Image 1 (cartoon, rainbow, N blue to C red):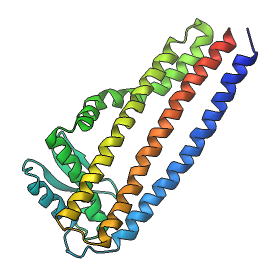
Image 2 (image 1 turned 90 degrees about the vertical axis):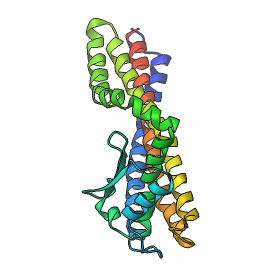
Image 3 (image 1 turned 45 degrees about the vertical axis):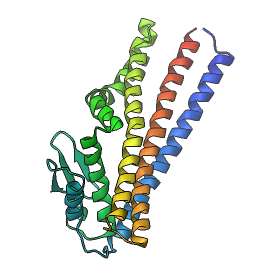
Length: 244
């Protein structure tokens, strides 16, 4: 059994990764708070055209030649999402019937996803294809990894731990693919709101702030998952060196 330099390096890297994961977790909470505060700030400002979020979503769909997607209201706040299976734009209560700048920004963003779907936007198609796998792997990856590490001292094999890390890598891949999907939807939204005149002047900059703050949550989540994956690999490496 060797406890020399290689193990210390592995342990040091693992400690650094734990620290970075914690920092990113704190940053993510701050970013989430900023999303809420930014949304609430511009949720108090009515758009000058007087449209509701639902009206803008429906008009944008028609203007883009999409007739098989519906717009529905759902409970909650910031629970807005596009369901590609049902072809439904789900808008939360503060967005569906609101005439605020925030509501129009969010509604246009979700419509952007519907347009991506209609046009066969590759990253969205890829994300939808891997979702069932990721939904399974996200639930089993960490338990499998922990069990694998525990059993390794008895069966002298890290196969289960490695399998857990590989399953978690699917989560990382999903989050990385999500980034262009979200950025593109926001870019489409801001362009349409400006070109079709649903928001004017300063309202467009305010909508950009709302969508930019939301986009940062996806960046933070992707970064945190990458660090977590690196941490899992560092644990396997350090424990293997410790055993050797």
